[in-house]
Each structure stands twice: as C-alpha cells, then as structure tokens.
Length: 148
Length: 110
Image 1: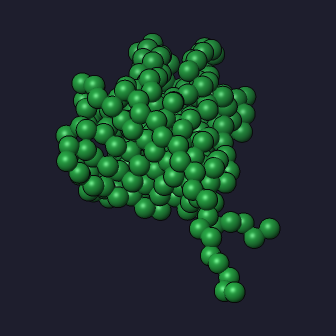
Image 2: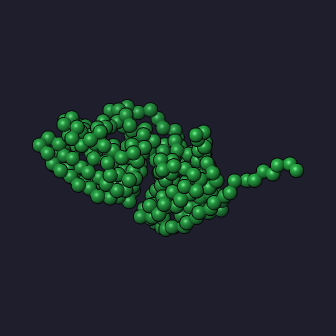
Image 3: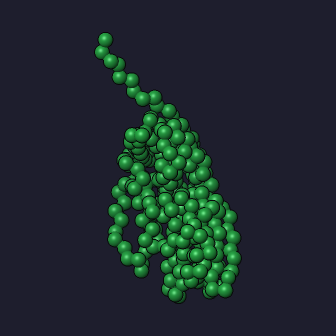
C-alpha cells in the first residue's frame, strides 16, 4: 500500500472587534493564541503580534478614521506556519503599496513609517485584496523547525 | 501603561511599564513633552517593564529624541526588556538610541 500523505492539522481562531484602539490588546491575544498553535516561541509570537497590531492601527486611524466599524481577525495555524487575515469595511487602503523605506540620517531620523517596516520585516508574505466593500489583508509567517 | 519619573540634578529618569501602543502612546507623549518643557532635556528611559511597544510608542521616543537633541539633550535607554529591544530593532531604530544595561549607568552617562 502506498504511504498516505496527511496534511498537518489546521487550527482556526477568529474574533471580530469594534475598530477602537482599546481593542488592540484583544487582537494581540488572538494572534498569540494562533502563534502558539503554530508552535512559535514567545519572541516570534510577539513579532507577529506587533505586525498585526500595526496593520490594525492603520485600519482604525487611517481606514475608518476613528469613525467606527469592525475588524475581523482570523488566524490559521499549522505547525511552523501562521496565516492571519484582517478584514475591514473601511475605504480601500493597500498597505503593500506604500513605498519602501528611504535612507535616513541619524541627525534627522524619521518619526513615522515604522509600522509598515515592522510588518514587512516580520512577515514572509503580505497580500492585499479588495472584495466588494471589504479590505482583506493576509499576512503569513513561517518558521523552520529547529534541528535539535 | 504606567509612567513614573524621578528628577536628579542633571537627569530625569522615566520608568515606563506595561503596554505602549496607539491607545497609550499619547499619555507617554504628554509626560515626556511636559518634562522637556520644564527643561529636563537629559532623559533616561527605563524600559525594563515594557511588555509591548508598537510604532506609535516608537514615534513618541523619536519625537522626544529629536526635540531634546536640538537643545543639546538626549534620550538614553536603560535595561530595555527583550520585547522593547525587538520592537526597536524591527523598526530599524537601534542605531538611534544609546542603550545601557542598567539605570545607574544610564544616569551616570550624562
């Protein structure tokens, strides 16, 4: 009998919250749950929380412009891989189209623009889609299992 | 988030604990700008108790740094938590701040 290939188990977590800055911690807790389900260590989980928090902050401040709405975050965990979908109904905003970081001098450091840099540095993939009236941002993080 | 400050002869030490994100960064900005307005331009930020530091918090650190450097001051970091270090490094700001292993050496550096 040929060996059967079993796909690694998928664990789902999902939460919808009002688009308010006070909800960011709750979203971070959800990402932590997803990251742990993927077998990530504390530092990798924290990095993923930072990236998702930056994306959610952007949606609240620049998407909804503090006018209200909802944000749904869904995590899909497989061993060594975490996929996070962030869905909102704010006007179209594609963070992947923001220009790459320019060089800067120590005498004049940039005040803003750090959030998108954190997202790019943490995540292996960032994809944006607009479907109907929804923005869908998908971020994926992979960690190779240690050989020990 | 909790902010405590202690004024020394030439330095003010500010201890920040908890979560610094866009929901709390405004409070940190107010506290630091109040100190700068009182001519406390040599600042030590004790970040040993920081549990989360988003770009909003980093923006406050950079804004404060730029402000006090204009008048010959500085913002120096004391014993930042691993989470604070990770956020600063990911944001590419590690070259900007002088980091000290403990509060005393950061204060003595001025």
